[in-house]
Length: 109
Image (cartoon, rainbow, N blue to C red; front, side):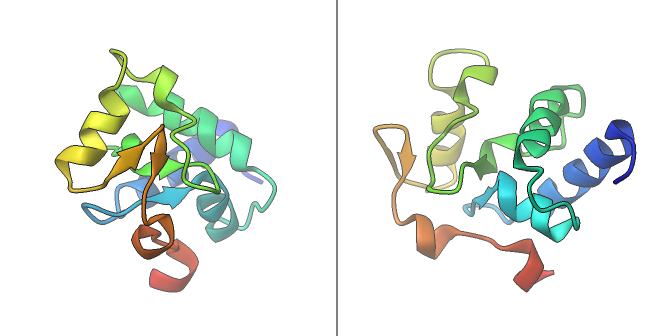
């Protein structure tokens, strides 16, 4: 695996490709980058993405659709609000219709 800075940059580039109104998971990005098992590192990259305002980190959730990274966003519900502004329904911190909204970079890129 590449250095964390290089890996973080790769993660950010993949995240920038997530379509509006869709979501993916930390693990899906890790698998796409050939780093299966590195979902947590993808999470760290999403947390570090605040330095790059073009990364839609709100579109990256955990493997079952939970907004597990929400505490890294300013405000109480910013991650949820950003998703809802794109038409994504969220209930009890979980993306509704997760399977139909899921974007798998391995299949779609």
